[in-house]
Amino acid sequence: MSLVEKLLAGTLGEQREGLDRRDISARELVAASFSRITARESLTAVVSRRDEAALASAEASDARIMRGEPLSKLDGIPILLKDNIVQAGEPATCASRILGNFVSPYDAFVTERLAAAGAIIVGRTNMDEFAMGSSTENSIYGPSHNPWDETRTCGGSSGGSAAAVAAGMVPLAFGSDTGGSIRQPASYCGVVGLKPSYGRVSRWGLVAFASSLDQIGPLARSVSDCALALDLIAGHDAKDSTSIPEDIPNWSGDLEKARAAGSLDGLAIGLPREYFVEEGVEPGILARVREAITTLEEAGASFEEISLPHTAYTIATYYLIATAEASSNLARFDGVRYGRRAEQPKDLNDLYERSRSEGFSAEVKRRILLGTYVLSAGYYDAYYVKAQRVRTLIRRDFEAAFESCDAILTPTTPEVAFRLGSKSDDPLSMYLSDVYTVSANLAGLPALSMPCGMSEGMPVGMQLLGPPLGEAAILRIGDAYERRCDQSVGLPPEKS
Amino acid sequence: MSRIESKDLTRMAVLARLALGEDEISSMTRDLEQILGYVATLEGLDTEGVPPTAQGFELATPLRADVPETPIDPELAVANAPARQGTAFLVPKVLEEEG
Image 1 (cartoon, rainbow over the protein chains, first blue to last red):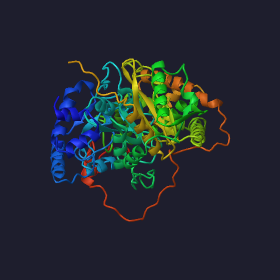
Image 2 (image 1 turned 60 degrees about the vertical axis):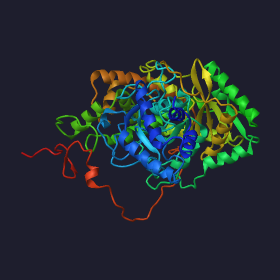
Image 3 (image 1 turned 30 degrees about the vertical axis):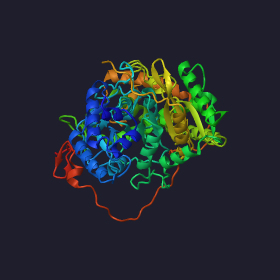
Image 4 (image 1 turned 60 degrees about the horizontal axis):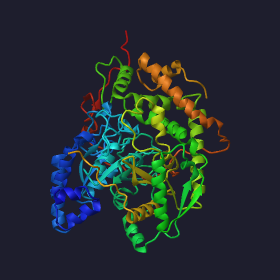
């Protein structure tokens, strides 16, 4: 393995050092990234690539690095975007037939920030159509595969981003998380995934699924790489009215300081008893998470049992709210202004109905119909408003819990990555795989998933939840764990 | 909360502008019945007096100065249109011709 190949499989931090020491050039790194994407095409992680433009940008990065003037720590680093985060002049299909030929006329806020930082966007990753799914099987490109076992799912809906980082194609990719769509695939693929607090990162240029829940976040090979990415993409944006006008901390700088300070003394971490139930979780996952708790105790953190009494209601609440918002957001796909239009419409209504019916998959239709139902006259109060009231109770559970602890630790998922196809015919069982992740979206909390070992030959993830705008605490705990007990699972073995 | 029937599904499809075949109607009715059966767990929960939460982070609607900005180039705005005439979107006739 050449030096550049070795670095490509490492962290963003290691690649930065390699670039700054001039051991490798950005052009070599980006070219190696493309070679790796080609070599692992069978994973269907990447759905479009921009070889020429990315190599040209890499040369510009090299010129800056040679002058000793890199734009940021991401200058010259290859990255990938999920196919629902738009980039001007590039496709953004959301893995849907209805956007099959769409080319974005503008940049997402995040895309603009990353490009201005010199990051090299090499392409776009596979996803469940419109981010509706937990397995990246519901895609016009076909399913993405888990690099650890290609017969299994890489999770979803940001599955392509997780698989690409796990397989060493790029050190950093971006996804979106509406109910766990960054954290669950990160957990299944053995990488770190961060969903920021609601409002931390502008949603401008993220194709909307459920606007009160959606957030963009990074997937990477270390906690500090996620902190670095968050430093770049967080911040107020007047184009997103839910963007929080708060000063942005320097998370990666704070991590350095926390490292210097050493232990986690004085930090209290809550363990919700509703999440640690033997019958619902695979024993291998509980064992790995309990080992991680011991490691964090040795690092100085204290643990206490807490209760989140409304946990049993989260999935039901989530699916009512998310589908209601989706039915409204997806009304814009009408075959008039962009996207696929049905052939030979006999009138405007026929144009709408056939364009949408031909353009959306069954899962997207199912969610639109459910959302339409729960918002319709006669059911609005019983379903939608009821779910919004329960959302308040769920949020209050967390407010109460955070009075006595700084963070909450749980498994990210109740099981390791499941077999492809095993849940495709059963929407409800697919929905239930998000049981540990949806509450963070409902309550607007920041949440991190990171690897904590293996079970049945597959990666296990643990989740750290913080209070709203409390990214610093979970990043600090995650980083301390990573440094004390490196459970980053490395690259998956490959058949030669 | 009540049972969903295929006639409800047909009505939802009209509201959502989806043209569904007989098979789709019956399979979607089955799926939605199962999902609504699951979400019925919320029924038993007392939410009397609990205000609804609409956002991930409660924030007042922001205001900005009423200053014109440069809009997107009209050519670019219609570049993805399936049918266009100049910088306008072309759609089938909406009104019936008289006579």
